Length: 198
Image (tube, rainbow, N blue to C red; front, side, top):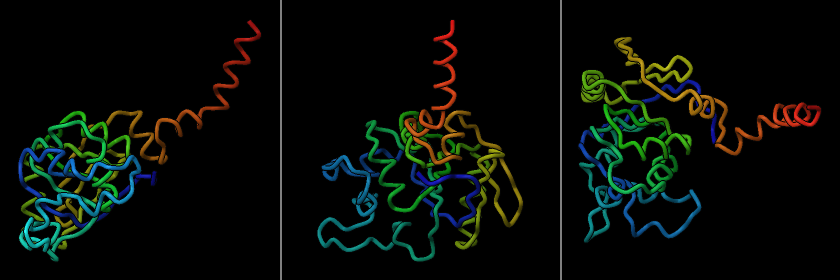
């Protein structure tokens, strides 16, 4: 995974509440266990007209005003089934963080395990983020993982977000769980040597 330290980016606003994992990546596209290619079908049924296959211009991901590596999301984002493919699709599309006032727990854990940072903020702060993008689609936000903060750059309005210490370390080093264990191989070997001496 890519290392995540500081992300400064514009954002795509998706204010819809209770977006479930089947909306994020419909079940009919879950035909592979590889993580690549899912971004093409991210929000497929919202992005494209079912009859013509043409992009729906009003959907934020099709709106040329918006772009960037941050998705601003409505409450209870990622609810529904526990499919890990939802995190894969968002990451494959190019998002590196999703900002919301609430996430489904399983989605948040899947995101963290796949290099996608779920940034949980207050309702007040996410409202400010949506308002900022509505007034200026080129507005930027800075997410500082080490400090655990997100900032609206134009106003310097900042908020702290919670994250598990272990997952934070993994993201900052670009580790998955196996990579993390490998990074401790010297300490593990030393521990085993000490055990054999007892």
